[in-house]
Image 1 (spheres, helix red, strand yellow):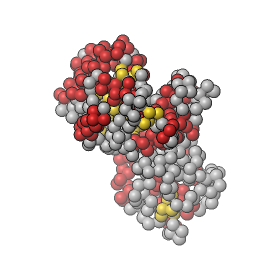
Image 2: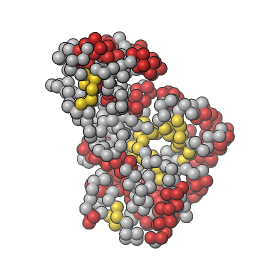
Image 3: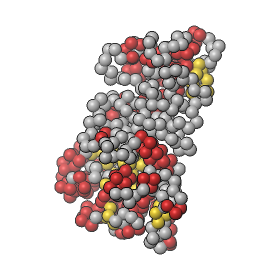
Image 4: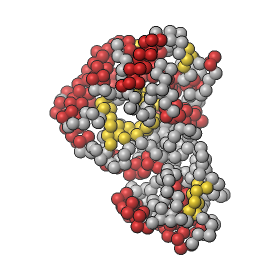
Length: 496
């Protein structure tokens, strides 16, 4: 058994050694006030999120993502599956309109054909394989098959007897779909996409699964679950499910397809019968998951092998049907404010709302007041900082000095840009500090609170109100063209 495991690890390590682990986010759209695509992309850039998955092929989002370098997985919704799976020409038209017309400006890397089709839309399952093949053939015809992978996300419930992982196998009633699916993924060098939700596994276990085991919390060795067949120790549900997928594939004589987790997360709020849907648990799960993936820990079966994962999800979706928890899986609210502050020490440069190594950008004492004013005007204009908090009567109006207002604007811009090198200079009148400049009710970005100012610097480019802070400052037009002219303005002003 040990020799077989070694061969499996060696095979996957060799085939996929060039794949870097990544954390991405799913972007749902069931919000009553869905941010404009440009706002969504601004948030992604500010949070240093480099991988996203869309649940459709929305043209506005694909255009907004162009020339950002962000890697994009786009989806064919289940309602389009029958048409594409029954017609090669329909599939070719879909690829032409949604892939070829945007690539390579928009860095599309993956196409997700449907979502959890066998378990949510069983009537469409017979055409799923045809849909995958037709989409792939259209990519081949466009010479894009090497750049863009094609697969279909599956629910983890398709795996039976998932613990111990070595005994896992697929629901055999779906073998007519899964066997050709695995052959397709092998032949196209693609991923086995799986949605993994330890929250639901925990909720449905009736106390069998400990909460700490579901949340990735460190466990003493005597508390870890042991697979009696392999003697592998499991300290969390996530790894056990990933390995269950590997063993289930091996049961069908497939050993060289990597798992890509297309959805995983934890809700931050729930109904009275969902007591473990809390901010603390959501923070714990997602923070631990991000560290686990980016540290390339791998799983007990495949240590050191990347298990890239898309978090579910970017925004809370208040229009989602079902229990309260369904509306509260997001990392951010529609205004770009974090629902909670992730704890990501040593997780690398992803998600600027990390509370580790907190730094701030402040105006220098004694700096020339005219230069400070010019920099302040730029930050609140082309720099796209929301300076409404400094209006008279607002929380950061006092002290009413150029120095204080410039400090607020500089720090907001610094965090808006993800604390990137060079984003705190402003022609020499700003400097980085570890001292939190917050005072009274004026809370600065990175101060570790969920105040209204945290991560709220993304401009409301589709603002519907003439009373918006941007309108009061008269910068709405500047915001609209900033994406095109930002670099030119930046260099002409010589401010950063």
